[in-house]
Length: 257
Image (cartoon, rainbow, N blue to C red; front, side):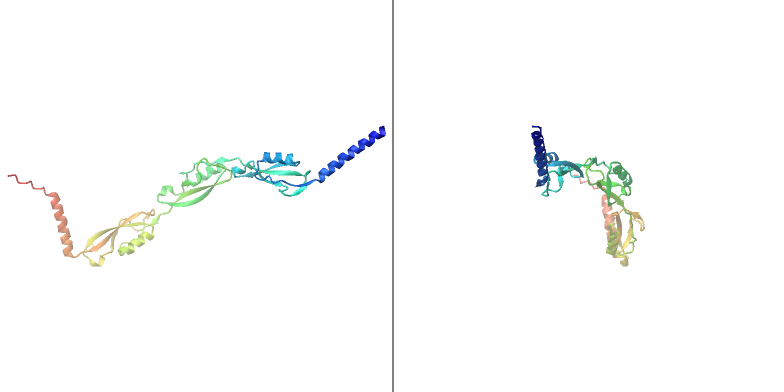
C-alpha cells in the first residue's frame, strides 16, 4: 500500500512538471496594445495569460500621458508566455507655467524664465524708440500656458538702430528724396520761390542737421527752390500783401438811406 502511494506521488509530480514544461514551451504573438491606457493594457494581457511589467517614458504631449507607447518584446513577436512583457507607457514631466516677461529687459526676462525652468528663444524686431532697445516687446506663448521644464519660450526683443541724417542741401530735389529714403527717413517737401534760376528744384535747406542720429522713419523736411521771374515774384508779393490788407481793413458798413 505504501509503495502504491509513492508511485502515485511520483506520478503526480511528473504530470505537474510536464504541464509546467508544456506551458513554458507555449509560444504566442504579443498582442498590440499601443495606444491603450496602460491599466487596460495590463489587464488584457494578464487575462490572456501573459506576465507583465511596467516602464514609463517621459513625454511632452498630454495625450500620451498614461498611454501605451510600445511593448517589449514588440507587438507581433512570438515568444513564450512565461516571458515578461514590459508595457512602456508615457508619463508627463512636471510642468511649469509661462511667466509674463513682456516689458522686461532681456537679461531680466531670461533670468525669470530660467527660475521657472524654461529657456528663451530670442528674435529681434526694429523699434523707433531708444528706450525699447533690448526690451521684450512680445512673447509668442501666452502667459500661464503649462510647459514641460526646459521648453523654449519665443521672445521678441526690440532693437533700436539709429540712422544718420545725410547731407542733402544743394542736391536736386528727386536725388535728395531718394537719399533720405535709402537712409530709412521720410522726406517732406515744401517749395520756396527763388529768383536764381540755377537753384530751381534744388534743396535749399533741411530741417534736421546732417550727421544727426535719429530713429528710422524720422521725418526730414526739405525746402526746394522754385524759380520765378522777378515780375512773378513781385506779383506774388503784391497778391499776398493785398490779401493781408483785406484781412486787416474793416468791412465798410452798408449805406443806410
